[in-house]
Amino acid sequence: MIYTVECSFTDPISEAEWNDFYSLEKLPALISVMGFRTSQRFKALSENCPVYLAVHTIDRLDVLTGEEYRQKGGGNFARWQQYITDWHRNLYSDIGLAPAVKADELLVLCAGGPEPLIQMGLTPLAMRSVALEKFPEHRWLARLPRRNTQLIDSLPEGVHLYAPMTEQLTCPCAVSTGQEE
Image (spheres, rainbow, N blue to C red):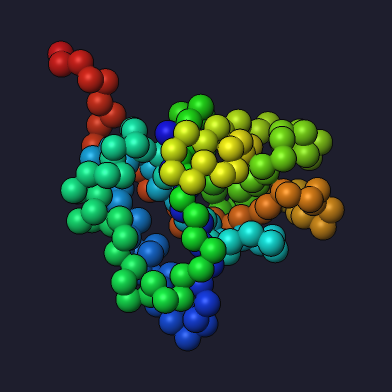
């Protein structure tokens, strides 16, 4: 399942410190939670969308309601809460592990259907919202090589670009199959 967290931040004075906390402390803490498989953070290059996006792969919804999640990362924003706006959380199914977006790539998201991404020459992955806000109900994502930046100037409406702020972190534990050998 793909767990997304989106938000904007309104205090330019503390924004760099908040970003350091989120990228250097929060993401490593989250990836250590049993049931988190991948985590990566992005910053929007597009307008009319939240500035920050975190994309995580988790095993199931109850990972987000567990005590380990609460202790290690869920909701640890008290210091910055007053500056966090446009905050949204969604849980999507259908694509397996979130794709790792490399430094020479951008993440492209669209809620209006796969066609704009296909027209950009991309292969979109379809996601369906199954929990939390459940909006947008459907989203498509793809990776765009930065060498194709000429596409950025003519983005279709509702298509948003995100630059990776971190590498994708992966769970240090072995992937469990649920079967003992």
